[in-house]
Length: 413
Image (cartoon, rainbow, N blue to C red; front, side, top):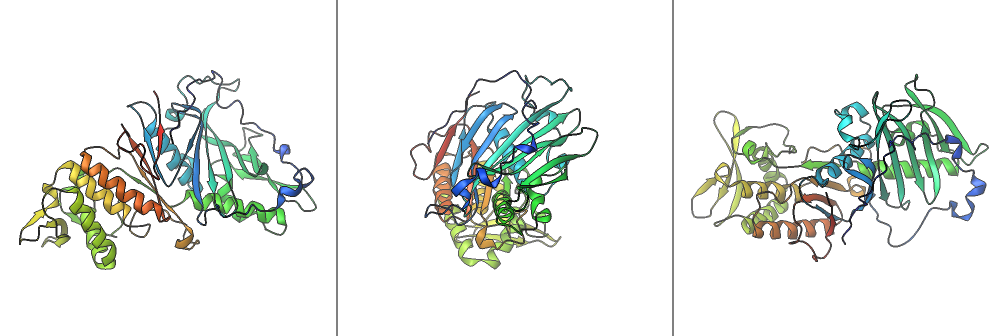
């Protein structure tokens, strides 16, 4: 599947449509028979993000990108591949309860370049997504003000055309937004202030009692969205940082894969089956024979990674080429999980109900054709099992077009 986002843009500020009135939350009477939860055999058991929505973010305007289990954003430099992944990661962190200032250290860089300020001298950006799961598709749209000060000024959570949560900035002098969420009890909605520095959807489980059918619907949709957004691992292996021995630590892989050797020592001991699969993957993508992949403890307390060639010879992984190192690191990421990767998983949700999403910028950098093919084959196999999803950015996806289970999103400058 290929998608090209709209290239036209409005000169209006992206903040112009965020002051949506909270009174627009419909009453139960307007809902009708659709109030029941959706059912169907095609509903995924594990919540997952199926669409990324960038209404006004960096180079993207009015764009919606479908996300399958294995999605590749493809296009030349400057087309917005990295910014799309950055928006996804930002939503994931907001869904995990992070402060908006932590998520956007340079918010002005997220504002569309030609966006003009409104009458109150405000500029901002809008992002969102759709999460599918047992509750059916749930849509989240968030408006964030970047200037004159960073704050979340509007948010809307909807499911099956019903607005479940809506917030709007009413008084710029206060650090709150006015929120209204669906109740369907003696009052159709509940109104209360929420802080303007955190995602309201992530706060709903702490604010909604769940006493009415409407409130339970709100809670279920919010929890589905949060679970779908959580458990994201942003990965861009840096070979220059992976060559030297590293100190042993927690055994959780960092986004740059600097501590690859330390993690190899852990995975080899804890999961022999996955380690066997990793060795097979490395054998398919690296030059020369590969009998095993080892972590050797050194006398100074550090550990280094080695390839066992099977004939009594061992090669330090630090001697491998950049492409080989990136290939080994990415294969390790695909064959592990939240317990090994540096991931903010939802601890209150069983692992069997969560899906790990790997965001891999520059996925094909330094890889030769054989390594790209083997990595894509491994990614497709792991994503097909349902416990992991991959969203990658590549310069040219011609080598992946037509491959079953791969969604290619073509971007244009």
